[in-house]
Length: 349
Image (cartoon, rainbow, N blue to C red; front, side, top):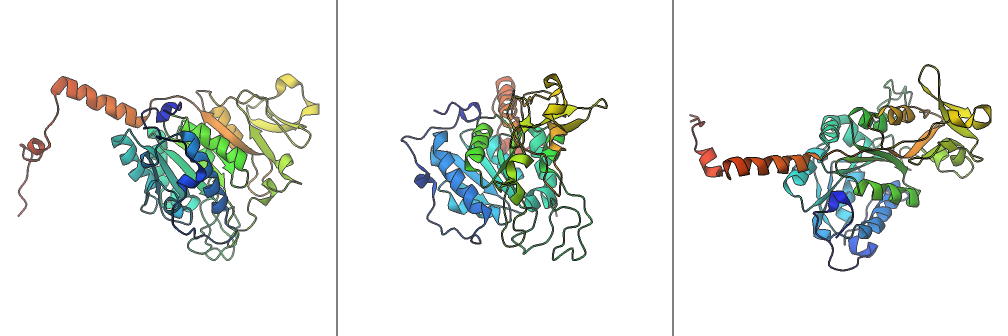
């Protein structure tokens, strides 16, 4: 049986598994070079570590390039409705405690038509693991700007440049009081799998934003964060309990100004006591939210990755089951037929 608390009721696999066991017989059909390939390989390699039977794992997706994911995993899965994957997955998680339920979505699917479903899954703390692939573009429909495209983005639907301010998915999730929020990158397999393991261990909704490259319609959107010459100076790797230091020589840190805001500084210019230590388990999401606002939309300077928040709160589906059990104990099991043919009925002519 898995040691992960959120998976403690999910049946264990009867024998050891490998990544091959989680590869389906379907031909993988994304554009050559798409970042989805790297994420798929990382997930297939990660799933055996859960120690769960494949028939007790479900991947639910919406619409978009990323939403082809369930076809390529040898688990149960559903390619569902545009933006509605969290709603469908909520039904599964609430009614089937023997399932590990994962949602695959993209920046358009999750944050545009699906925005309302996403924020309510997060606030309810349904036991879902939501992987949000962010390439800052609509890929499936051939290159329109998305909710995460930077202002001024020239696309097929914004030939003069986008006028919209972009969404920050991590800030949005923290604002919705999500109990687990993280960010990682498609090309950093070790970091990606570490974040996936932390998300799987969490009881409740875990949102993982994955910076993903669309090499056809928005190539190199995150390249400065991947290039070995620039990434160390731009990426702020968050580790719970550790002082936030980054830069090639760890010469940058984070302090709080007299006004209460966070600010990136040169470590040599401040005392060590002034530097912020990351606390992913803080009840108040204020620090995590402030960290999520540090990155520059255009230059990608000061971009935090890792687990922003990871707190314990009973999951929605656990509370539902406990409430139903209490009602049954108090009133006995209900009868569906009695409910259908009871007093509150109408005849439609």
